[in-house]
Each structure stands twice: as structure tokens, then as C-alpha cells.
Length: 383
Image (cartoon, rainbow, N blue to C red; front, side, top):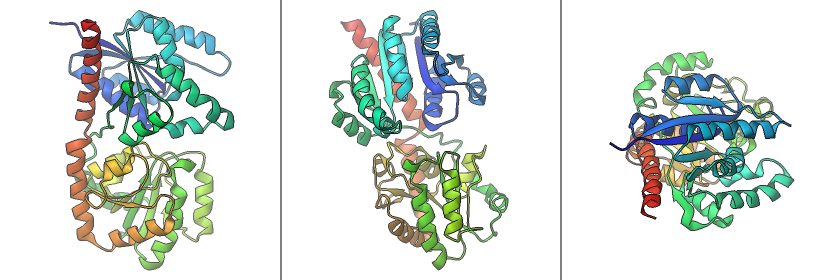
């Protein structure tokens, strides 16, 4: 029997953001297959998610890279890679890629994989970063055997940014379809009461980091139009981020107090999503749309902006509805349409669940990454 492949994963922090959760799912999945042994390292911050990884049976390391001490942290990273002796180094997100890939190559790792969750990440560090980062990513990516885009739209963005097409692969993100399941709707009544809403509420939900690119202000402005026509409509956005106060102020100024809440993150997001009548992904830019995919897995009708990877996920008119990106008026029309027709919501929700099971399951994602690792190893052995 051949020995299992050793795969070293590098993420930014031990926090349950979408990219880190996805890489944890991949690492746990390929390790359960007994064809890989995995170690997951974080560059900058530790946290409760490290314990979650340990519960999944994954070995973890914390590099600890505070400002001004990059040299010592990179030495620690090099030590962790050398002692593990991986067959494959796999980085996710920008900082782990720019710092980790050169270290992996210098320590002799034979195969490097990078997962890219969208080029919009490159533009969030200011004017200087927007000038430097694309060039730096192009240079580093030349040392990767494969650069994985999480959607075809992201692949096109990477090609436009100058990456070589021969290294690019598309592996869509995957959802835990057991956790995000329509049966979780059983707790809907209690959740609605916990939000302070009436029992007969028509609930519109969203979830994500409260940053400008996620477009939650579009949902706030659309809500103004919806509540004028549907008194039972209520809105909730789960998440935290730098724009929370601005969004809460916008809700107050729009006179939506009592109709629109920001309760932060909820431990059981699967039950939260399943409780929604409609889930909205109002992103201004989006590489894939994991929150929308999770809502779809829970059997919820989705309204999503027509940008990035969302059209690939939602399939307009089949498993959800798309609206013009950044348009509160267009979103309000779709929300009124969906909230006024329970049969339509049920049909779209059922189709959404089927679509995720067929194309966007976590099991499919794990199989695709495992196939990529094994393909890279087999290709090397033939050379």
C-alpha cells in the first residue's frame, strides 16, 4: 500500500471565515479518505477555530506573525514545513500565498497549490496595494503547480490579471449538505422570536462580513421599498465587520427600526439560514457566494446580485433569482415577488437544494482537490 500524501495547509488565521472553513473541510475530507495526512498552519491569529480543527483530527500549528517580526515568523514557518516534509503545500488567500509559496519552495516542497477566492481581495489594501499586489501575485503564482479558482468567473479574472492559463484549475467551493439541511427549519418560530419579530413574519436574511464589497447597504435600501408594500416583511443580517455601525445608522435613518436587525454571528448558522423565507446575497463583487450556497442547501429561495460566480451558483430562474448588481430597486422588486408567492419560494428552494447536492457539495469539492493532489504527484513520477 502506498503511503498517504502529506499535505501542509497555510491559512491567514484560525478564524471561521469562509476561505478558512473551506480549507479545513478539504483537509479533514482528504485525511478521512486515508490517502492524505494533513497539517494546518495559521500565520497571524489563533482562536477557537483551532480547537475545531483539532476536533476534526487535524494537526495544527500557529506561526504568530505580528507586525514588525516577519523574519522570525517566516523562520518558524520554514521550520514547520521542513519538519512535516509535505508532498504538497496548499495556500489559501493572499498573505499565505505571497509569504508561504516562496518559503515552501525554498524548503524543497515539490508541489505547490494555491486557492484564489477572488481578485477583489487584492484591492482592499489601498492604492499602493492595488498597484503592487497583482504583480506580486503573478510572480509568486509562477512557482505554483496549480492555481485553483473557486468559480469560472474567478478564473477569467485571474487570466485578465495575467496569470498563465496552463496552471489554472476551477474547483467550486462545497457546502456541508448535512449541516445545511431543510430540516433545520423546525426551529424557525423560536429564532424569529429571538430576533424580536412577530410570529407571522416573512423573514429576509443575509450573512457575511460587513464590508462594502458585500453590498449590505443595497439590502437596507431595498427594504425601505419592501416594507411599504408588505407589512410582515422583516430583515436580518448575521455577521460582523467594519461597516456595522454605518449600516445600523442607515437602518435608523431609513425608519426601519424594529424591522431590520444586525444580531452579529450566530453559532448555529444552519438553523438561521433555514428559518429564512428568502436569503439575499447582495454582493457588489463575489467570487463564489458560499453563504448563498449554504442557504440553497437549506432549501431556501435565494435572491443574488448578478456578479462574479453567483450566476454560476444560482442559475437564474431555476434555483433562485438574480438582480442587477448594486440596484436596491431591482432587489426590492424581486423580494416583493418572492415574498408574495409561497409556492414559488418552495419550488425555487427545492430546486436550490437539488442543485447544491449535484454540483456544490463538500464531498465533490474534497474529491476534486484530492484528484488534483494525486494528479500532481503522478505527473511528477512520470517525468
